[in-house]
Picture 1 (tube, rainbow, N blue to C red):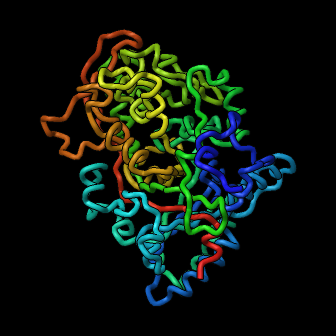
Picture 2 (cartoon, rainbow, N blue to C red):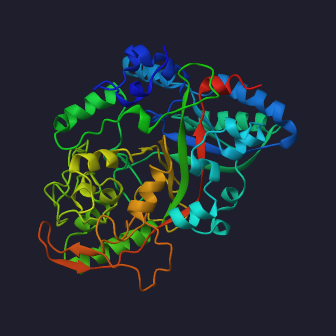
Picture 3 (tube, helix red, strand yellow):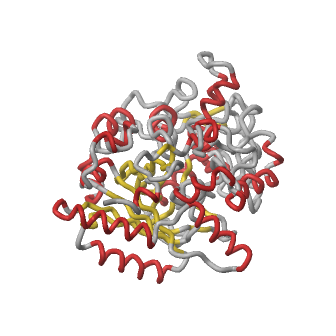
Length: 477
């Protein structure tokens, strides 16, 4: 019996258990991995493709073969993870296959057969999307590969780098007959000395995610006091949409936003030090005010010093910091996950309803680093984040988060300032309309000072993709 809309909205309290999936069994077998839970490999290669117009039939055959050999289902991903926990046997090479709207059309699909999300059909290069919503740089300033019309994305990952590169070489050779590889990105997981996953600025990454799988939920409940202040659980309808090209009654897919974000690490840390000097506070606290967490993941709304917990808590909200005297309104994690802030403004609906709407904007982040492998290095260019996130509705999730929360200087209140990490004002930095953010000079007290923290993340290119069901990929003809 096919899953219903209610089945997507009302997932069991403990999430989906792949070992005892019940009615979700068919979904997991036909859904690509990496969507409900990150693939977990240390290294990945992303190949961006353009199909050869005279080789459409051959391209479809190639996709079928690739899907059968490499594309990993959510069920297979879970089975391999279980085998690793029980027997120490590592999983096979992991792969995703994704298409753009142009990719569907290049393969001969009609408009009614293409996924309908509006940003997906318009593409990230569309001027309305680029300029009016995301405030991205002009396309001519993107990296050359991203300026081209992209048809497909192959994500191939493994813990063994040599094995991964050999696989990528084999796949690339076989692709020559049907496609051109117009761009390539090599990603990896960056870790600090404690073994925590971090990004190039040095902050623990991926702490707050919507959770769908039982093992993740139970683990988080244990670590985070049974979600007394923040519940990370999410229903499937924020990440999955029906794939009407699929061949099973439970064929689903998800939209992927891909953005290459270059980080000027040296300049960020110099700016952080200047902020600390201006406020007369410690350097690590200044970084926490920018990010909303200390480098070790400790939320600055809960502490004015890092706690060095192996697993940082995600069990917090801003109920005891409504005036933002501990965590500024413009701090990165407060901008992108307000945890109830929108329910406190005058125009908001009832608080619980505002919080429910907020939670529907969440995305499932699957980012990896690129460039410099040394976590202590301070590169000025050539390193950063390959930002990937899955969702069911790009307009209501990633685009909303970027355009309505991160970019404006008046969210959650007038004069707050934009997100100092991923915010994009869409105007020159010396424009007199730009807001200079106010920062607390003493944690928990109202006194503030103005300081303009520069934007040290630069968007280098990207695109919108759809991850189709596996039954669609294996039945192309």
